Length: 105
Image (cartoon, rainbow, N blue to C red; front, side):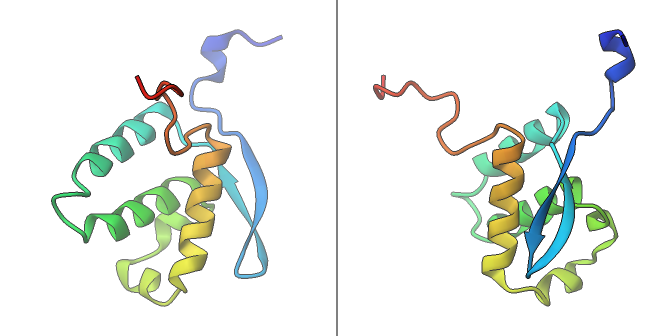
């Protein structure tokens, strides 16, 4: 049995579909989530931040995503990028409204 310290940095992965093909995604770590939350706060200020957010999530969690250039991202269908980004967030336990009180208070 490994101690918790030995698990630092370990990635949990699963296979999901992207454009009809299997790709490996991993759960986001705490620092990734914090960086994403900072970008989300800026979304109202700048509409371009939404696409930057998609790139950030995919680069952090898709196998080989860190090798994609900004131009590479422009060659993918936007709905496919959104689907895989949502799948990563769900797999990582980060969903829209997470942490909000369900009663709205």
